Length: 529
Image (tube, rainbow, N blue to C red; front, side):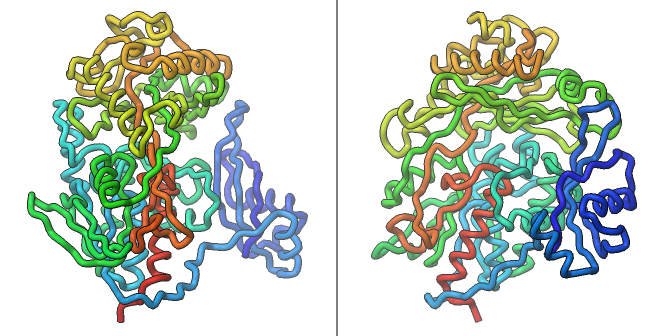
């Protein structure tokens, strides 16, 4: 165990000795009493002209009795240690993992580490091929429904800002960060207060994870879509997947279902097989773009332009009646990209490279949507999303994504051209009136929320800010209920996990849920000899 000491504030240029001296002073011990000090998290305080580092550090003392006392005052931390696994007694099987997003990758890695040799199925392509498919979509508008921003190695997180912040307190989070760093993500994710990898480095880490799984005896098949489940006596007995147009059946009694939030056809297949699916709230809206320099200056004030500062972030929330309005998945120095998975639909998301040095910064601005807003039934939320995406596609006449200046959106008139902020969406941002494709409650909520955000971040409602629509894939519109042993309600051997199952909301939380799902499988099925 170590003392966890937060709020260690030192000048930006400080070295290790200054940090030790400050920590010792805060703990009330001599510097010589510190046996080991490690930086756990660091952030830059840019509220003053002279920047400061604000650190959370882990401290070990020579005097263990005094350390225990200080742990009681400041808190203690221990490195994540995988819990002792008591393997189950059910007949040994080769588990199948469906989906190679964060949940699926970490579920497969956990199973492989314990010798279970999982079969990992991913409907999309590997990192290299998928990157080429996404680039073709951005340059030419050619969508591959099986390999895109949502489907393929790494899931939707592979084409994002690579944010690794999470609100969950599970100790497995630190293990996830360490594993990503070991697989090629920047080492800074282990200490940054708001860690991110950028899209290019998360792809590198995904490739590294896949090689780890294979090296441990797992098998990874791309372009292999989960087509059907075999269920007998209330328990999974096998799966069918389609590869190169040919169906293949695999016998198994353990399936980790890590399908992601956009596998709409898979949701329908699950329903046909009696899997319980319930609708859940989500949010929908648009992407807003401002000049990166404006956001940086607004957030950093007198420190704007300091070479130690990267592109600035923001997170804004508001209320409109009973609904929440908030910014989501902010991409500093990034671009707006197409996240559609179906023909005749437009959905948008944000993406940044590690340097975050693009001209614009963007964020989703979304309004909460509840099951009361869409038709009843397990997939009512899916149908709601599809209607918005198809309306946006029609509004842009199939030529790209509809976009509008904020001034025109607030005034309710179509944009004819863009002003001081040029949209980053490719292949084309089509001037339009987003009020036409958005439900009235979302449009009105966005207008009220953006005006309120302008009071909190002056200039947020700049007339030339660009809105691009529609943002619908903020989270899964469904949840697959599971029991205490992580199995799907009423179906043994089927373990829903991650964002697509409604149990996570980001790269780290999805990865953690995948680990927990795999550990549940370990606890039920006998370890291979």
